[in-house]
Image (cartoon, helix red, strand yellow):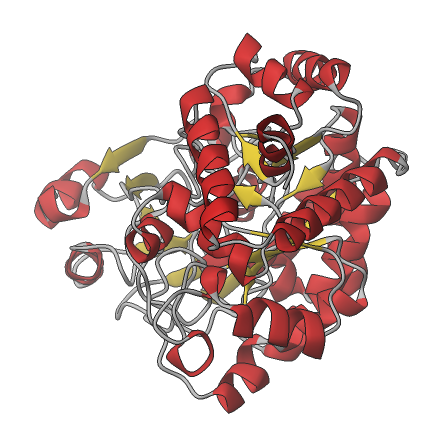
Length: 486
């Protein structure tokens, strides 16, 4: 058995931590020197490009092969552009366009931007097939509902990111697209037979393995036919028998954040969750966003205790740390690609917009944006048409607290352009739109996953397939509400 110091360093080599604020605290740098695999950057760690580059340099000074990860999916999930919204459309928009070469170029641009700042792993792309319109956490993060289309774009995204200079981490294995609950808050259960899982959810993962993805992220979801009573993150049947042996994946298996309720509820705490994930075949354990030195030491200690009491075998933890080191070695030898055209994302977003109905005679309408809460994955990123409007009045309202007659009175003779996200799921939205359209010209702009719901009586239904800065500008331009171009 290794000495205690060796066990601690071995355990740290399987952990991806995080820290508060834009400047890395000394403990975060010291842990890297002690063997911590790396850190994940969240929006709270990002102020501007120069500051991010300084942070990654500080970590690399402590250890040259440190992993620096982030969730830069494009579209609704962005860390680098969390203050303004992403300049790229997300996966749903790219899937709607269905130009695989464009998907690769967009992801290559994202990868090159990350690599230039010293970020080495992108916790993307999402390759889940969004088969449930009521899915609260995937939605526009998915390339769509067709497994073949998702598979083609997933492979292109992986190739683009890695050519851009960062390791791609495809998520969320074995597929989060059929869930109707959010694993950030509870443990979703998907009752499907393995045959359906293979037909619907698994083809994109086979595609990213074939495309050479350096990492795959697990899902905190329970699929009884595959994972039994626990989530995929704790299932050897999912991570070893299926992903490694059947699909031949040889890279790093990365967990989704172990602080998420889906994992914590199943394991009884972050420390036990880390042990369970390692035992199941995971290699790199994301601790989450709320991390301090105490949390890291607690988890490392739990792993050390598990090696002593028999819950973990030394060879398994050495294997996990070895795969994480291999991932870090790959990132050290990969250079960033040349930057792509800076307006690539805006042009792509314009290609994604779809219109059902007729857009004529809008003039200077009244724009009404319906408040929609953000998911934990999205965080609070600005969205909507507001930043792109020129000479147009906009109101922001809550659907359940808004009187249709009041909006009609404010609008007068003007058309109402009602902007929302996931309107088919938003409380009060359907009733508000229906009541307005019964007596007033209304155009709906859906900036989330559109679903199949279409309100009766409206002039037009505009779908952007995302709410990024690029998506908002594309919609505003289509409606003739902005005079500038990105």
